[in-house]
Image (cartoon, rainbow, N blue to C red; front, side, top):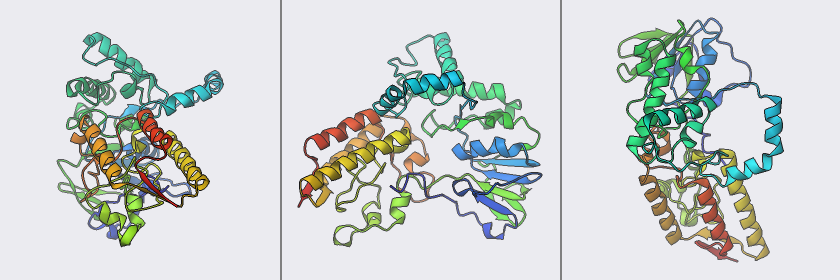
Length: 396
């Protein structure tokens, strides 16, 4: 249970050791309060954590330089104090909400829709998108249309809606365009939830640097040097993400049968049965491992599903005097093939994201989470258990 996003990714920037200021990685933030009051701050990376820190730091820093390589389709979080009546209503139906999440595709209690983005008029589509946008969160991707991950033409309608909102919020049209994704489909990178991120670029103390036109060449003692400019800063924040899904597992140097290491077995990418186990490594379970829904769902729901399944499995083994359980090679091969085939039905495999390992040099490119949906996945896991753990070898 080592976590899907627990090994921070810090790119090997030349000259980092020479930096005389203070630097941070958002994945290892200090426990004590950090003040940027009056400082010049560089934020490198514009994924989920970058989107969170920029508006907060901009309120107190003298200047914030945001170094962006790839803009994201950020969705509004609409963070706000919760109305007491809303809290009462949620608590009154909490069990129903949680059950709905457990059987849903993404582990969220949203209503499913059975309509294509191309099946309605442009005016109706705009209205549907606007209603979901105003709700905030992932409603925009999950309660609008059911073909956004499968049909590029349908996806383009969602992408353009988001770009139009960026143009409405960001006053400088050049900056708005730089913040507008053009190179990947909507939801094929994890869409961050933002609260004041786009508005931050209307502040005079926030500057966006486009790393595609002027990449970072090195960290220098007093700041960051790109191919065109030196930026003097007092602090650097690396919002550069994680070695997701497999990073923590491979870092442990786990050995299986006959001295085989997990690193060697997964040299060309992870191979699992249900994302729970891997052939050659008896009695090893992985909670939210690769080729399980994991990061493509509500992680709390995904973790609970795995914990409950594993706990029931351990009880079955104990009650039946079984001491060894191991994924069978054929079952593993079948699951790997199935996970790949489902992934290839979507637009996700066409975008270089951390979901496919593209943020880590040399990491095999494939969709690491299972995209077949949490509810469907749970049914498959439950069927395996109900049939006496088919696909596993059991030995006393």
